Amino acid sequence: MSNVRTTGGLIAALILSLMLWSAAVKAQGGDANIEYRQKIMTTNGQNMGAIGDILKNQLPLQGNIAEHARILSINAKMIPGAFKAQAAEGKTDAKADIWKDWSAFEAKAKKLQEESDKLAQVAAGGNMAEIGEQIKKVGGACKACHDDFRKPKEQSYKNK
Amino acid sequence: MRFAIAMCCLATTFLAGVAAAPVWAQGDAKAGAYVFLATGGCACHTDRKNKGPFLAGGRSLKTPFGVIYGSNITPDRTGIEDWSEADFVRAMTEGVNEHGNEMYPVFPYTSFTRMTEEDLGNLWAYLRTVPPVQQRNKRPELMPPFNLRVGVKAWKLLYFTPGRFRPDPARTEAWNRGAYLVTALGHCAECHTPRDLAGGLKRSLAYAGSTDGPEGQLAPNITPDKETGIGDWTEKDIVYYLQTGLQPDGDSAEKLMGELIETAYQKLREADLQAIATYLKSLPPIRNKVVEKDEKKKDAP
View 1 (cartoon, rainbow over the protein chains, first blue to last red):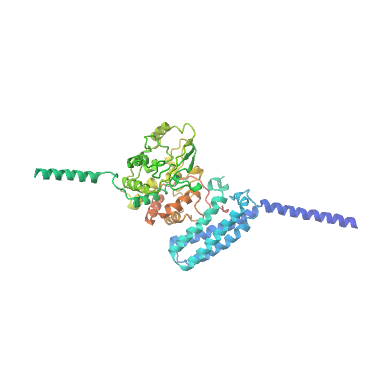
View 2 (cartoon, rainbow over the protein chains, first blue to last red):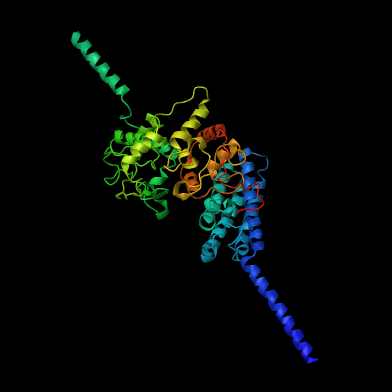
């Protein structure tokens, strides 16, 4: 009787450790992490693009600019968590420097959050000139992180 | 009486001489500051990466032929203090320096040759007001035979057509202004047109993008091709981009172009940016894939 239980226990332990091991492997190099964080980044682009559409074409939706800015701020808060898993291989332009310079990466995400918060404030004021100036600052925050931590176009996986 | 007439003739000749004088008369530094912005703020002459002083040179410019360093163009002895305005105009429009030596065409005199006398004079006046910085120029590190200045003479025969911009009377004023801003001051073709093995621009692919641009960066196809260029951008998109560095897909301009927008192009008058947009949209669309289009793809950067 105890033999069966011991064997059963051993098998269970084996299965459990296999599961944990594969979860660990997935966490390290998983495409799912890449797919997830790319959605956050695409959402950022779409909201920046939406604000641009409103400003360029003077769409009667200026009240939405503050909302788009709030979305950007929420996304910015999620960026560090989304990039925690070290996945630099495959269909990604994330540079390995992200995990080498983690505090710098985090700081850049924080800057995006701050500038987006400011945009939400400024947009509520309705002064188009001020909104125009602040959108440049938000774009600058995007660029500052991309320049250090995203592969440039000439090295992008999309152009290989 | 005869004396009076003689004096009048002399005075008239003198005045006519002054009026007809080329730009050696006082240029307008304030107007020159604007011309400076339209050229991209002479970014090649400031070593931004290493926080180098304004226009004091030292910036390494990677080319397929080796590295060349932007020169000091401040009015210091190590810069261009001893240059005359004529030296400056000759460098900008003929690619010959103050000693009469050929200048490597990394310096885009191939575009600046189209500048008007007025803009050249004003730009010169502005450059004289810039704080002088003592910084010796670094020697270029070009591979032979491209390091031989005599080779530049041959290169010029093949690839350099000196001459001022000629407006097209069949086109609108805005188009002509845009054409001047793009082909003379902005010198956009120098980065956005691919080059052949000798480093000359491939004219049949004008503005169709280059994978080996300045500092090794990719410069996109900016012809109005819908598949591979900016054909789906409106003129408003182009103006907004030059004002903010933000593309229609919400992504921000990268590295060098981002720097040029931030430090220079975004400060241009909206009418001028509109003129640039008008000109770019009028270019023949050229199918030349340099970059994957993000919007059509499922994956993002």
